Image (cartoon, rainbow, N blue to C red; front, side, top):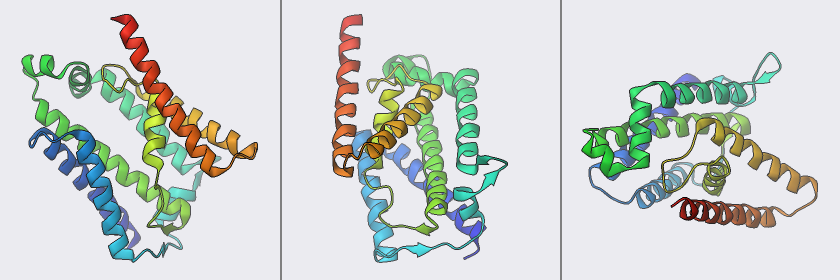
Length: 227
């Protein structure tokens, strides 16, 4: 397959999965956690069926460049992160869509009463998340120089932990792109620090779990005090 077609297909699959999530959550009114967890397992299962569990090597082309390339002294994945971060900040702060997303996250019934098309906003939000997931998959495949069927297992908890560290409330109404970027950076520093001091990979998972529980507990405590 042509490498550019592979990139396009990867992004298209991500968009399709995200839109499906948004449709099931907004139209069928299925719990978001169940929908996204189910889609995660469906995607992993399909990947294992297609690859039979074997990695698919990638030797050159745009996929490898996206994962390992440099523009000057800056790695391409970092440039992707900065560009997406800036776009995310602009979307949330300076667009109608961003205002609607924040209103929906703060109080969905109130947003619906204001006339906001909640179903459409959810569909758009999950579709954008799917696109970014597809892009992350392309970058990861390039980073590993292969399509690894088992790559990224367990990272969903890292993502949640990074968001919590960045100050986003799981109950909604609070959070920012900059905070999430800082949270992801801090989580990376924590992981690297644990590696440097010789902490086992298994214990690293325990630490991430403790961070996750501690962050949620702190958020609940802060919310209770403010009320």
